[in-house]
Length: 597
Image (cartoon, rainbow, N blue to C red; front, side):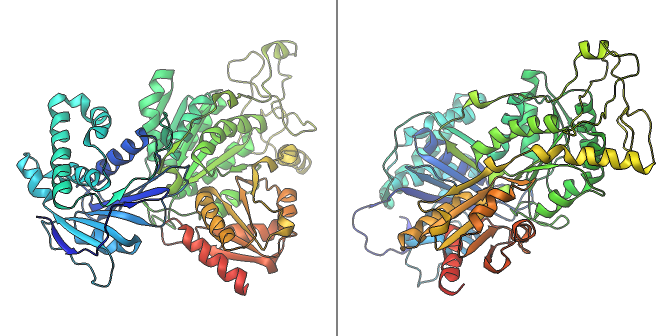
């Protein structure tokens, strides 16, 4: 019999309205990720919109890890605030995640340990012999598959619905392995159905269709491939390493090359070299790597070499929190490098953004011949979610001002001026090997020809002004999005965010509007050059502004004050403990500002 600590009378299974939240936790090395992936992929195959989030430590084995799956009948953009079912392989899982369980929620724990749950918590707790059943099948690690089977019983999901996922995951290992895993699922299902019974009914299933189940990292890499990128140099660093893994798997099919460099300094210089040679190239890293790359990014700016640098942010400073999320690299990205160079900073907010804006990052880098930062974070980068698809017709390639061989042939030998002073500040670019197109991409200040360094003040001033005015014509206002039924001059509160906070903000705003407040939401998907005029139009009439960001000092709020002012009306909503925001946290802070701000 299942060991039941407490079970309030509930009657018939509860129908979950709109969404289902499930989590499995234990020690790293116990198959937590594979368990979560099987549940999330199966629900995605069944047509649900799914969002998965991993909480893990920077250890190979040991330490607490958990995997949360949120499934809904509508598009969702974050991992959710609540939890309906928790599968616990150890006591730490209960201790760390009990606060998320809704009233009358369910804990299923492996009865190989003695669970402790505060008596005042109104939850149902069942001990199930997960390990014993797995041992009977010949391998105790298969307790994770038994747990999936128990989960299926609790929500009334037939075991066979998992077969396509199991076959896709284990098919290469042979039919015997597939059937062994299916048997573990069946054993778990039978035990759960017999000893516990169905406790909940899944939400209404949306129209079944093929949906992409993809992470921000995967979408960004896919977008880079679609943009024509064929060279990646990178050093492994969480949470950006998945980008390199994706390229290693897919690049060879398209003639691409991946180099694992000895460090981030080498990686960015390799990417600069490849771009100089005419290949669309990039590097991917996180905050510590960005710090190491600063001098080389200055080289790209001075030599006017296109460069795309992906920053998947994590908790800092120093090594910081390698497996936790944060938005604390903003100042580094906008103001980093010694001296002054033009650069572009793009901040995708969704998985779809990661794809489309990767394409645009390469176009902008070559159009303006400067570094482009494409900025994500662990929460967006490493979380897979269901999306309805991508529109490949939106992919357009713009290689900027490339000089033709015909134009070079019409010039006298040595007449080509790589850094020709133009009204736009953008000079036609030649590629190595083009006749009459020779130049030196100096890191020193140089003249128009780019064949020798200079130190005279007049040429320096001319070249500096030329570089810095390149971005004068770049309007990023299309990357400023306003959401709201009311215009900004009629709202009670304007919430401003950037990057992965978008889903949390949208759900918090919906709750505020249900309370009767008029709330607008301004989301910034590009931060440099700052689209100040469009942002000012929204901030100026709003009576109160709440700036939501995952950092301690309020970097976006400070940046807004620098660029558009309104110091007295800006309020902060900040989180910096390594976890992404919950919608309830933004809602609570917004209520404070509305009532007392």
